[in-house]
Amino acid sequence: MSITQREIERPLGQGLTLGDPVERRLSPALITSSLAVLAVLAVAGSIAFRERPFRMPAPVVTTTPEVAVAAPDKTGPANSGAQPGGAKIIQVDPADRPANSGVVVIRDPSAIGQNLRVAHLPDPALIEKSETGPLPIRAADGRRPFDVYARPWSGARGARVAIVLGGFGISQTGTQAAIERLPSEITIAFSPQGNSIGRWMQAARQKGHEIVMQVPLEPFDYPNVNPGRNTLTVDASADANIKNLRWALSRTTNYTGVMNFMGARFSADGEAMQPMLAELGKRGLLYLDDGSSARTTALELALKNGVPFAAGDATLDTDRDRGAILKKLDELERTARAKGFAIGTGFAFDSTVDAVATWANEAKKRGIEIVPISALASDPER
Image (cartoon, rainbow, N blue to C red; front, side):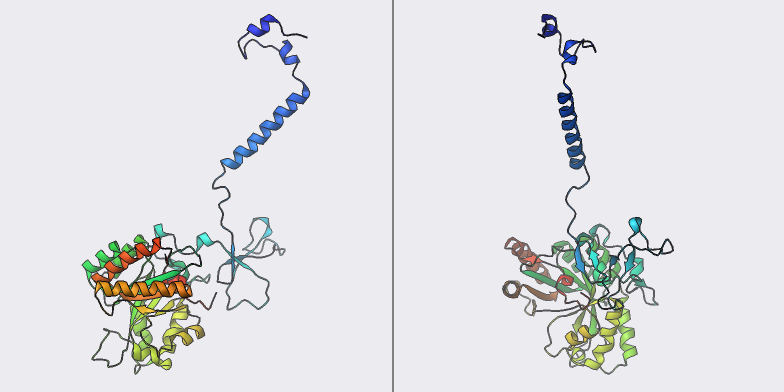
């Protein structure tokens, strides 16, 4: 049947009724095809507008104390850990997990380290109250300050450099200037002899810095060379040294571990070092050896006590001249390119802060990743 002149002149979409010839000519095949197209468009739209499509990171299989998803629980509702779908959430502690238990721990890489927006806020589960202040402690679910307060990093295996600068908190104006000047990837070490450490900790963490605490250890020629009050010494009892260690640890919160301040004599004495490393292992803290003494026993004792461990490759500012510090940093970069990573330590001198800030910004352009000290630690629990 032909289309009439009246139908040609009618405005599009107007005046059609169920009895019009145009509608009568819509075949069932055409209607089915149209519905199929609409269905495809609906599915595509739902995918396109779904929150964060295809951006979930791949899970990482690990053996650290994390939440693990086990096989479906068939014991019934009595199990308080039951989740929708019958899966059971289990807290896994590597020390207690039997060999060949079949339990696999799955961790989301995006959850590693504390969110920088709340990094200055202590986690109550990681605090033990003491007479001198808050002490770091492992949480009941196995989480460690070393993990929770770690600054996130890329996880890539290119050339990596960690730089740790100590002495923060002693000079108020110097501390403020250094926190503002240094790139956020630089790790900051607070001196327990400093003032207003809690306030500076919050400022540093809000800027994105990972932090550690310095602990004064006995050097040779002590007390003529004196790291300060509450120094841990070889001749003191283990109880006295632990008391002094806890005083230093309680000066603030939100740090991943400790590093030595001086201590060539103390670190060379395994009997003196053992109680200190055992305490750090119990509390889930890292130990950073600044690398200034070749006689240190720290590595062996850290492994023995389950302590994440790192050692410095170079002291940056034995010569405080800015040019000399830049040369040390260039040497550190060559070390990182040769073995994959390098660790530099120093102090928050104006010349050091200026040189490190300048070098770090340029090194990143050359493909060096500046990472927190926790990223380069050897962890017996991983």
